[in-house]
Length: 93
Image (cartoon, rainbow, N blue to C red; front, side):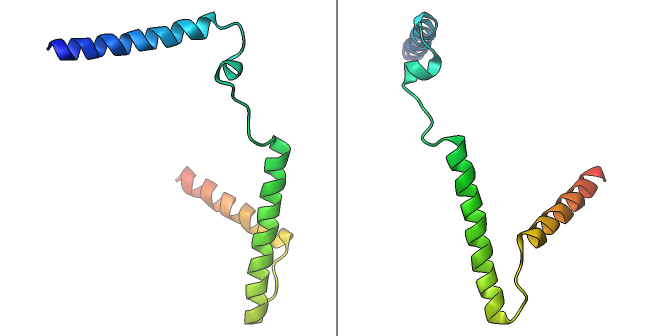
């Protein structure tokens, strides 16, 4: 029982110290933790666009080998719209 109380007391003390330091620090939380995002949102968007382009190119390469017509971005967008419409109908049931 004494070990349990000691453990709880130490945890409460540590949480209390963290709360006090957080309130007493004059800067922002990000400054306190020395945190900054690794990439900007613009870089993230560009990475996503590059990923989509690469996947489309790879899929079209496989389609060419099979003799099937290539997909365009408009085809993919239409498929996504159809899928989203279907999902919305299924949620409505």
